[in-house]
Length: 463
Ligand code: B12
Ligand code: SF4
Image (tube, rainbow, N blue to C red):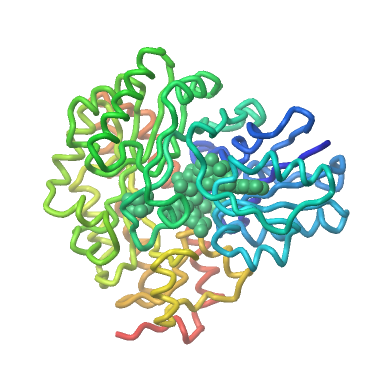
């Protein structure tokens, strides 16, 4: 039995087109979902994982599979349907799962043979058995997985063309920010994989650098942090010789022992969502506001960096408080906080989130011809109507923010500072050049977007 597991590309995500810039090698990540599904697949299946981000294969030239499984974030849904259509025309059954299939079940059911919602770990072997016997159900509701049932991902099945391996150690987030899909998809209960499973899986990863995909590696409560420390101790003891990066909230900075253990276990960088130059901007968007308010961000960032860990800061542009000048304010805040990299995203109503419900009820989602318009839901296009910023205005704010932060003198200062403080200057340089290299491509993408959508009246703001 032959199984293809496919990660569709989004042709609009120029920012991750790997072949256009060698620095993008550092920004294309392995589709871990498919590697986990492969880990759950019985040996009688011959598995191929296709990641279209590395290049779209010549499907007609490939052997006919018995089953196709497709994963998709919302931004990949369009392409997912094209791929599904190709295989269904050949009479090959297609199963789709992942976040978009869970949030937009009815849309997906119209375009594939079977949909698996939520975390497939507990149900995938049954789906395969049903497919083998030719009695696939239209829909499987998988629910939340037991973390002890999460198998080691099949790291051996993907090419060596990636700069980073990938691993997951926890799922779920109690903070439930209104713009984020994580609580809606993985639940509010923070679930942790058994530490020996994580360490064993780390040992099976070939790449020297690894992305820990957890949404918040350290969690929110003291017992979560205690578990993170135990994990780091076990990783250090296993002498993994890996450098890894992860996502965490800013309270990562509050525990010196945690930071020291993370560094000892190989942590080289952390993504932190600051979201707004002033935490007040986040009031009303969910639990993260409480973590950010009344905090000295610069001191927090410095505490992390003192352990040799780089800090990438993420911000959102288009919050209801954001007015003209927000681009400069974000660049200035990022400089003041002292982050090594800056990633700014447009506030985007993702299906299944509270922000989606709110914006939809306020008629603030002009790009709503679905499924075609999903391709713009990459957080790198302004798909909504923003309270105080027009379409042109918000694009200009994004552009000026990135141009300031990624100007040559600013990059030089940051890289020099990480060199001086012995904080992985080469990683800092690669990250900064990767972003800077994409500024021109982003400008072209925005120009095309404006040409196409700039005249749509429903993009007009109310104030
Ligand atoms: C790692 C990650 C990335 C990596 C992607 C690596 C990759 N190629 O997969 C990178 C950094 C590239 C990335 C990019 C983006 N991401 Co992202 N990312 C994540 C993150 C943190 C973890 C995903 C992961 O690997 N999980 C581990 C695996 C094991 O879990 P899983 O993917 O959920 O898979 C399980 C189930 O979903 C299901 N399943 C999944 N696929 C399939 C397929 C079949 C056939 C079946 C049966 C089951 C099934 O079974 C799996 C096992 O239980 C999630 C947050 C999250 N918690 O999901 C956000 C998340 C998926 N990303 C998100 C977004 C918005 C993006 C971007 C659009 C914007 C951005 N800049 O962040 C871009 C997408 C660009 C594009 N290509 O279009 C949103 C997606 C929301 C949505 N509705 O689409 C999430 C949920 C974060 C959020 N804050 O809301 N991301
Ligand atoms: S803290 Fe992060 S992962 Fe959790 S809900 Fe908020 S944005 Fe999502």
